[in-house]
Length: 559
Image (cartoon, rainbow, N blue to C red; front, side, top):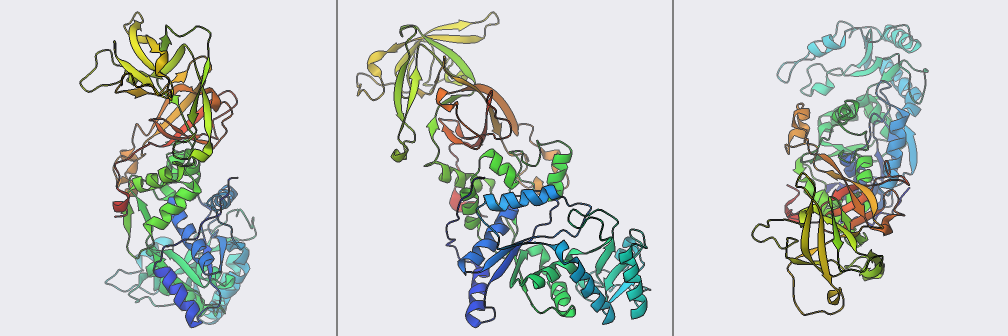
């Protein structure tokens, strides 16, 4: 697996300021953060922001970060997701101090629930989920007490133990906290702490048939692990009073503090794991790692680098108010990362054959070019040139429009790194389609020779035909047409029918040894990544990461 060591983060934000003050005041001795995904899907770019935040804050202040799987819902979780999450975190360049599962603490959580019952702060309720919802009240009206709220401690202890033993069916009973049904915060109106679920768990098997709710389990996990700063997104701000109540009522020794930051929203992008799973399940995409997906695995397969993703996350910053980031900002950072790294070569995506009639038959000469004109340290490469080459179909126009400077009958252009050629004859098939051009070349105009006899306005790229390697090029555009439709439940109505186009063409012979995740800049076409999923010894497949240029202003992309 490709691994990189992250550079120190330089940006400052309110979370860092809080951490620095807590250390200075002696409130905490060591910073402990955690990244706590639920293993019910693959991580996406929004999770990358949280990963970078938690790990980089801890690193900067010589603390530590845990990776913890909040696996409290056996119906949606799977070992496949656990392994993919581990891979993604490591690929982004981070490593956890300790690895935990919420299910590691199920016994401790159960014992703390028993403590709540004994203190009169929890009770077993027989109301259905619908009835609990109906009696919860509204923002302007208090909720109604459950008819089972007054059960005795002894009865609650007995029922809760029998829930654990499996004596009741799913939905028949729950354990609820006894807090305040008139609280202005709806989360404090006797929330459910445990529900019954006779389901196999990926980690504990069939040991349990009752499972803690997230709002109960999460603060206990933080406290058990010794987390000092529990960093989460803004939608959990209203849950903070319950977070604090659980830690206090369960008499935990460690008292972590929760802090909220703005989640990442990106234009033309689905950011909900539920919706991403729907795209996979309905086969709209080629799995979780489809290069159109915003998943870490999808971005990796498309060709994004961990360095680019980390820089993107640092650039968007950590704020207290939600906003939407233009997807082109992420594209900006992959261009910046690859422009000095990626070898530059030529590829023809929609080939048109040219025969250079005055070039010697059977001769192949090797031309020299820099591997990367912006990075001399990468050295030079050698390109075969012969009588037969391929160029792009759109580099020829039989009846040129005004301002067209590429090939047309009688016109002369430069072949990049090679010679001037002139179009002399157009060959067509029976249907009138152009299938071949016959050109002549001027041997005095070899690139690098210093020729100054005349100038041409057009330069086109090409691939030598006899040694060219066949390749498939997968061209990607945003999956969602409407910039904001990714957050809508009708997002499937806004799918881009042109989000994936495959074309067959050729690359230079020097690409024969290209392997999965190798990255190249193809002249005029953009940056491409060798697809690790479909490339084989018989077939090269390239995913376009991003085009070469964008009109995007990186200084205005965070709005």
